[in-house]
Length: 165
Image (tube, rainbow, N blue to C red; front, side, top):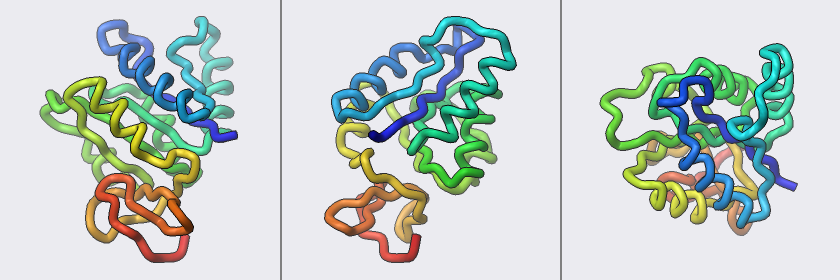
């Protein structure tokens, strides 16, 4: 069973990305991937949320995050995923003027820009999410590869990647 962790802003209602999360959950569940999405859980005490979310990031096979609007919680989940060498798939809306330099420079991630939720759905449906790994592409800025027929392929540009994991 493949487990994905879905990260997006929760606290500030104006920054929530519930429609994005719903599209991601549907696309992943259609691929028989289990999704942990704290956005749709009932409120809990902060120490319970911290423990629960850290445990679920640790159990996950990869993390998907919406990063259009800065969020401390999302940043913590991304950093934990980097430390654990989990593949990270980041999405941001094309309307954004600038991304965090920390995010841009981080290893272990691939960045996708989207204009519509249909873009997000299409991107996720093209990737072999059952078998992702952290591996730098020599041809683009991606650090996430998918395994197809025993070959590593960049999830961003599709190039075949050779190298040791």
